[in-house]
Amino acid sequence: MAAPRPLQFIFLFSLILISTHFTTIHGAFSEQSHIMLPTDQQRTEKQTHLHFFYHDILEGKNPTVVQIIDPPAGNSPSGFGTTFMMDNLLTEAIELSSKPVGRAQGMFGLASLEDRGMVMLINFAFTEGEYAGSTLSMLGRNPVQDTVREMPIVGGTGVFRFAKGYAIAKSLWEISTSEHFIVEYDITVSHP
Image 1 (spheres, rainbow, N blue to C red):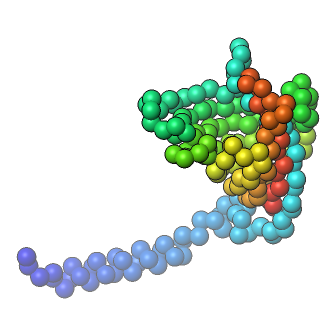
Image 2 (image 1 turned 90 degrees about the horizontal axis):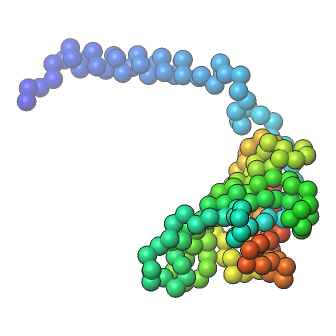
Image 3 (image 1 turned 180 degrees about the vertical axis):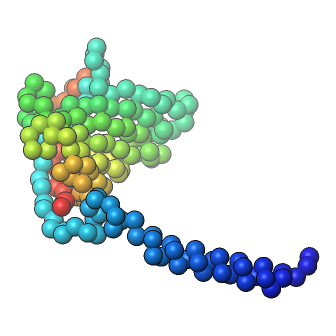
């Protein structure tokens, strides 16, 4: 292979310098935008506490939970790999007929070979009050065999943009049935 010629080297070097100069000078596109970026905003965190009830309707003519993946038979005694999709009602009080406040939409799957540990991906989509149109996203391990468990809130939209926090879920075994499973949620989030 022939050695590079000095003119080619100088041309390429000059081209790199010029493009770096223009990228630096003209690369500040965020200054031209009307969108407030998190670094441009005054960050004062609020803390919000939410309390509601989550209703899994597992059987009957209008289930809100459906199985979408059934692993091979004998795969695991824990049901590892079984996956479900949900669109569950969230209510203000414990009764299914109480005031709706939103929906829990997402999926969960049995993610443990040894116990009933689930991975949950849920968007709590609020439809009432000051949080109507806003969402909170929960993603994490749910050891569903435990009555009380904690899961992370990893984000949100609307009022809850940039939210972070945690959810405490409490299974209400004493009033749940094989058709209707109820979970009480207490969520605490910090957000701008």
